[in-house]
Image (cartoon, rainbow, N blue to C red; front, side, top):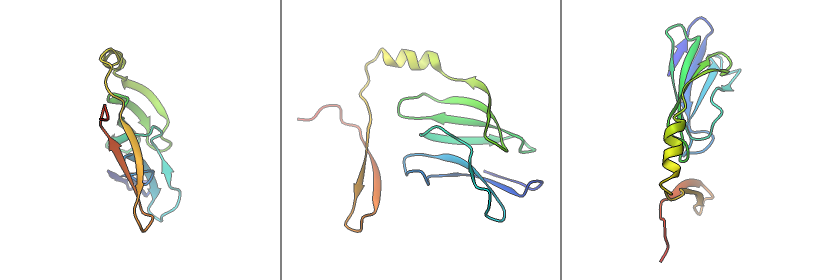
Length: 123
């Protein structure tokens, strides 16, 4: 995602909190001071200002349409909601859409895989 030379900080997106989640992190070039900048579980991505002081976090999840929030890059602090898509979220509730169900499978080696069940009815 980016590198702030002034602060020797790398900004990146990771699935370390689960394969179905994407979070934005920062970490010092020396491998210290790792910080999760995004707080919502779902898909987060960041577009940084040229000087890496700010970023726009683009977030969505199985239950939340895409939102855009201006954040401070150093701390992740939310500064201003640009678009929360509240009207769309309200409109979607009227359609009584099926709820997405997430679950974890473990293989014989006890490795975990996160999955999505999209079925609405079982026969």
